[in-house]
Amino acid sequence: MALILLNRLGKDHKDYIKQQVHVKNPYLDTMEEDILYHFSLSTKTHNLPEMFGDIKFVCVGGSANRMKAFAHFIHQDLHIPGNPDDIRDICEGTDRYSMYKVGPVLSISHGMGVPSISIMLHELIKLLHHARCQDVVLFRLGTSGGVGLNPGTVVITDKAVDYSFCPQFEQVVLGKVITRSTELDEEVASELLQYASELQSFPTVIGKTMCTHDFYEGQGRLDGALCSFSHEEKLEYLRKAYEAGVRNIEMESTVFAAMCRVCGLKAAVVCVTLLNRFEGDQITSSHEVLVEYQQRPQILVAYFIKKRLGLIP
Ligand SMILES: O=P(O)(O)O[C@H]1O[C@H](CO)[C@@H](O)[C@H]1O
Ligand SMILES: O=c1cc[nH]c(=O)[nH]1
Image 1 (cartoon, protein in one colour):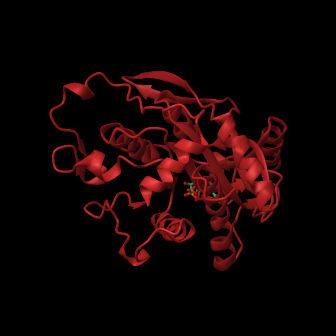
Image 2 (image 1 turned 120 degrees about the vertical axis):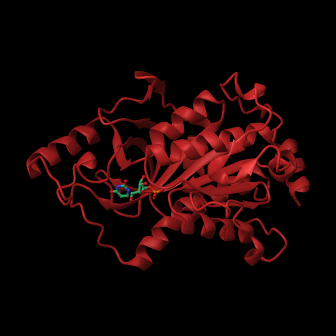
């Protein structure tokens, strides 16, 4: 099945130049073994090219359950043979992250916030490198707070921005701040927008996504255990964000965009909004509604994958 899919990919996308994963660490090649500790995988104990060499799409999201559900959904959507109940968590040897492989698709959870996704991305990018994967596209399928959008709207990120609305990610290295660009792949983003209009299943927009280091004060919420600002100051900040083009707020997009970019990986961020932050801070929708919202980015990205694989015209 995977072979047929890859042949189709090659045939239909001749212009799609083979892109390697570039790890940017000269020390890696000198290591006899690389232990991907948080995945419970290693270059000595696992045949990574055999296990992962055919991966073309990697989908990541905060919650382990969501990424398991996505694995089951994509199994069905791509008509992969076999019983979906046999899809096992490749990282079951650790309880840090969950990872599922379904044909050319890898589905991985990353937990909440920049430190958690950053650790996962270091190991994922090394994994793709060791497995000699080519032409991989990464997607973050997430939830977010909307800025001036109705709940349930899907936002395709054109730029991931920091708390001051700048498209950059600051990483402290050896006590100094390194700044990396957070531009995402424009082609993938506009392809996603086109597919959203073909699907016509839910409202979808393209815009900037603000990444914060906290869910409460960091996102201007008035309902945390601490609150050091007024309601008016909150609205003023959200208004400035809206004017700067920000349409949603989450907690991983800048480091995701920055690390993928440095390593030559095409990447996109697709998050559904759970509420309109101009109208409140608490997430009041029912569990059923929230589950349906979370499926929206999955439906859009699954459609992208099927298009890229030539499974739909
Ligand atoms: O829905 P996920 O992918 O977890 O992402 C969003 O939800 C979490 C906060 O509830 C943060 O991690 C934020 O980025
Ligand atoms: O408001 C929200 C909702 C989901 N995730 C966030 O980071 N913020």
